[in-house]
Image 1 (cartoon, rainbow, N blue to C red):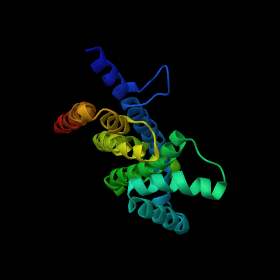
Image 2: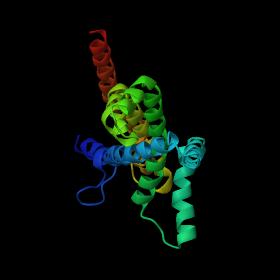
Image 3: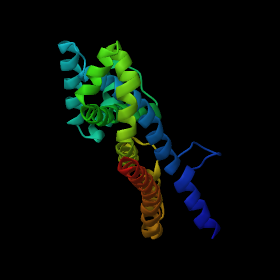
Image 4: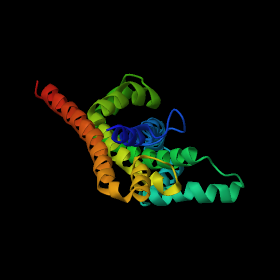
Length: 227
């Protein structure tokens, strides 16, 4: 029983506090951090895509479409191999993973923002203009609050997807949940089935909880809309 608890602890937080934090905790922390930083960067990208200046629109559209066309695994490799190659300095593993997943998060969240912005009627922009609001004031006080409320289930759904996608960071050596399971199964082949069951179970529990949150938010919004 003690051995099982130790193994589960490794899956949850790795050797912490005696060693570095690892396991499921790394996936959760990385998903939350990159969700927040990607949210800010994604908002800037979508503002660029709806900018009145054609040059800014074209540049941001090119960036978003290019990054969205790439798998996350390739973006992770870019930051892990190319930045040290050009800069001459090796990035810490977690920083490399954070930067690559943030970029991936930003371009996807910018599309969520864009979908919300497109659902706002042009009449509201015109009314804001008639009231003497500037373009930025209209975005901040009218468009953005409605978009956030409308697209909240989509943001939670993306967080769920992002959490699962963080498993690719194991490819560069971060000891996350996936890498913990692989290492344990290789070190103790007799625990291979147990390792993969625990690994799958932990992913399922976290993802299921997020999916229920997204569903409740969606149902609440539908109820408010019906009223």
